[in-house]
Image 1 (cartoon, protein in one colour):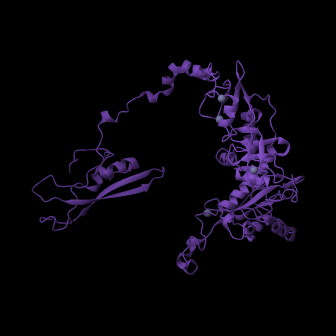
Image 2 (image 1 turned 90 degrees about the vertical axis):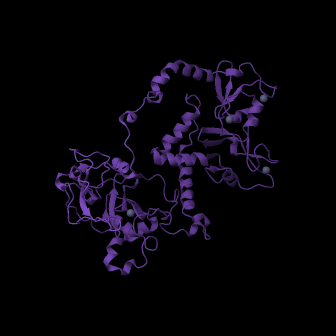
Length: 487
Ligand SMILES: [Zn+2]
Ligand SMILES: [Zn+2]
Ligand SMILES: [Zn+2]
Ligand SMILES: [Zn+2]
């Protein structure tokens, strides 16, 4: 044994796999190393290594020894046989046979990147100078515009170039970027101005920079575009020539989502809707916070009145998400159109739960010994504090999904409730679950729903298609039962 004199815990990089007699005149014994992993009560993973005699093939060793002979070192005395905490990283090194690094090379070498703030502090003043330089005209203080006609007085905050240009050159540079933010130099400071006030107009239905022969200004010439860079008052002309199509279609062709289909005066760009959609999932920002952040980004002084289009923005987001859900579910290419969408078609199903025809073998129903593997476990949950105010009636604000997604179809749901409205609520004996016993005692005045009941898959906590329904009063199991019955 090459490490026979070694005592205590073994190295983290064991290399020994064979025990041999120190006497070289005797044929060597070969052993197999068995490694056993076990979970300790302390939640640590432990590794036990033991050695079992093995016989070499005769053709490899003509002087094969008696295979009944045990290993030279008794298993109980072998330091390899001790339970040690298992370290996966060291195990990988062992398997790969990585050579052990000398201690001197293992030592981490310090670089300037380890103390970035200390490296930055000597340049503190320089950073401030560069910030202040951007508040002035910089190298363009005395140079005219490149066109040589007018003075360079305008700078774009969103173009990469900081070079100043004259009014007409700035407009010419922004036919393709009409939502950039411009600042005008007014002797001692820059002042924000809009491209609309400078004379730029967006012409729909024609390439950028081309004017229609019969341009039709937006209703009231008071058009507002919500973009990632803020809320922009914009001069916008619809196409009124022979290529004329309806105004909302012209807006959609330009990736602008209109607020209404008749005389729209406000749009949100597809980019800002996509941005808000991602942001609402990743940072839980509300539409209210998002819209007002954009408004303050447009003017952070609060001097200019903000276009209050929050409620319109909410409606646009509502419609945009419905269109995206239909598109992602493949309904846009369906020959019968989106009207043929069936209940639950837009819901995202749990990929791990059993779905016959998708992730189950064809004979799963007729294989009794293994049928238990395909069981679906469901759980019922409810949140009876999630109130929904009665803001709009169904006539003014009808639902868009109509049971296509995770919520149940409303008409069928209400019919079910009216048929089972007299069912008595079963009392709960659970001391810490008063919700069931408090059913029908909560005020529902002015509320469209007093809570939400859901049916989830127990193992993965995903909502089922048509597995969510409103609670009109308390946590009544009748209503939750409907979500199961309709599946
Ligand atoms: Zn110019
Ligand atoms: Zn620009
Ligand atoms: Zn035209
Ligand atoms: Zn599941």
